[in-house]
Length: 138
Image (cartoon, rainbow, N blue to C red; front, side, top):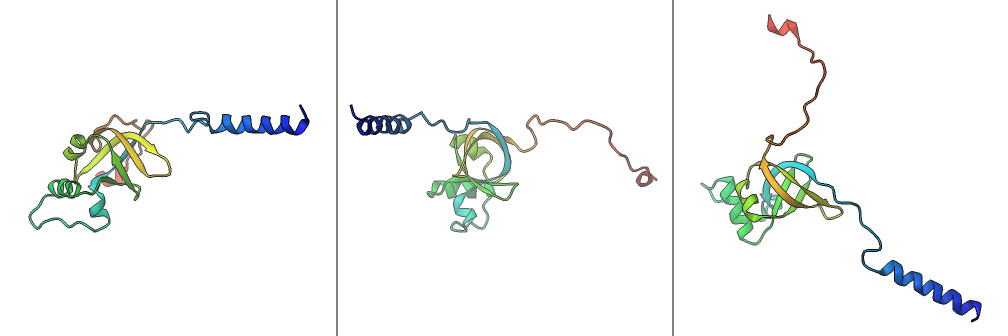
């Protein structure tokens, strides 16, 4: 076999191997906690308006039922699309919540595993001495 054919076959084989699904592993998925307001994309983009005497929760649920998707306006100022249990998200619609899930990089989509009232998750407590201003107590 001549050298050209051997190099061509080797290159072709490498292309096939690297194009196989699962060969190039993506970043490992790590669960994180995201804090923010559970809302809908229509409210964020101002394409959906609440009715006059409507609660934020019912407005958000109506917005989603109108074809928009659940989103979270994070405390970091970013909007994240939410994918997960609609029943869980509806409980916290319009309110602040802690969402545990995996961020799908590049898409700003959180794959939600659980939702809880903001501040109710077990978070690390800072330890160490605490400075107390004695002059304020007088």
